[in-house]
Image 1 (tube, rainbow, N blue to C red):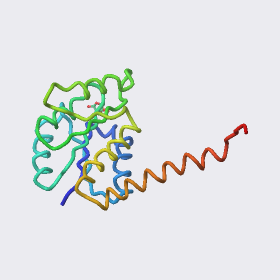
Image 2 (cartoon, helix red, strand yellow; image 1 turned 90 degrees about the vertical axis):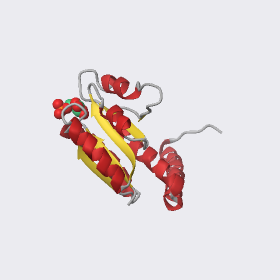
Image 3 (tube, protein in one colour; image 1 turned 90 degrees about the horizontal axis):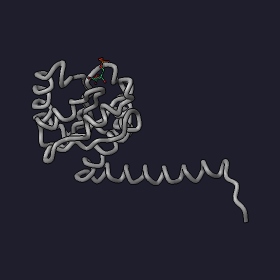
Image 4 (cartoon, rainbow, N blue to C red; image 1 turned 180 degrees about the horizontal axis):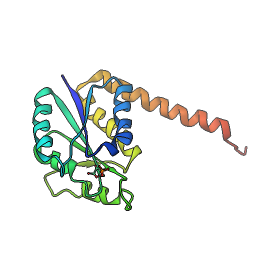
Amino acid sequence: MKFVSILMGSKSDFEVMNECAKTLEKFGVKYEILISSAHRSPERTKTYIKEAEAKGAQVFVAAAGMAAHLAGAVASMTTRPVIGVPMDASPLQGMDALLSTVQMPGGMPVGTVAIGSAGAVNSAFLAMQILALADAELDAKLKEDRILKAKKVETDSEEIEVRLS
Ligand code: RP5
């Protein structure tokens, strides 16, 4: 069974990361979501990554705030793609988590998305784009979504636009 694995460092990350889960659900993509911390539960994280790989996790999404090491820790434990989502969880408003997540050493990549909600949604899209490389049905759904987004720009504009002839 192929699925996306979503991990987050704390329950306080859930509200934002549920956006990732909801986006995957909308496209009918299977996922697991759970809390595991690089700092507070490193053994649980390690055990889970091995179990998830064996069960069929294709892509890992890892979200954490502050000194956000979860995505990097996950990347150290798997060769499957890891997407990092920096959480806005401190007075530094996610800049701490962004740098901690994105600044991986060469050869140990974490594909890092935006801080917070947009990043959570984009983590789902990026994960699905990876899955779609081997899933024509999902690829078609993603292409249809792009068409709908472009149409929405036009209909939104029609409601407010003023043009000069
Ligand atoms: C990180 O520290 C978590 O990912 C969370 O974003 C942040 C704060 O965690 P809590 O103190 O709210 O549990 O490890």
